[in-house]
Length: 329
Picture (cartoon, rainbow, N blue to C red):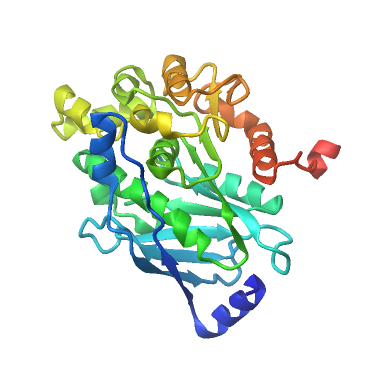
């Protein structure tokens, strides 16, 4: 089925609907913490509908929606939205690989959309998933309630895992080559979701770390801001430790494939300190070729986005990425 035809038909008759099936199949956890986290994230696999609505005049291929597997009783948050950036040159060609992209804490999607456009320009379908209470699922009152953070992240991680199966059901996507990428907050959701059952082929984590209690204790800027929000919600440090432990990336880190996982860290990062990045890398078992450092902090590391994107494209395609016009100059 050709994406071009699907898009044309969608503009005439509205959204196109596809049937997907959950492929969730986690192996038992090696520790009690892992088993508890896997139980927390689990749901009963079933068939579900995936809708694609073209956006006329938009730079995306359309808006993809599907039901959250872990609904929280909030209609707006319980429908998952993804922006589809169609891989360049793939409309009439064979199925292309895809990457599910996750945004940072601010939720403005600037970083995620830039990554998605870069991937699409290299022939890779990219899908920017809006986490609960962000973007098209936004509810500022709920997002401002820090006490809901753990529930939001549990739902978000489950949404990411189901998002893989939603993407696999779409036309012109190579279902055997679906990866996940997350930056900062998005890397938390990506690492935990990927550790559930290894469903993503490649895992790309930017500005990520382990031992989240330590990150909130020592981290600056956005980490410190989140800590203050939790404190205002009367979440004590002891309660915070219990909350964060439920979604600790280190818990499922050993379930990630160290040959198919890459971590990009800033040498001067003070939001996710260097030692926390190293903790995550060691827990996954990453070597120097899979834990890559750039000169910059949590924000200026963006200056190296072009090189990181190029590296990701090479891993997804399994070959060197063609140089952009800017690089040729």
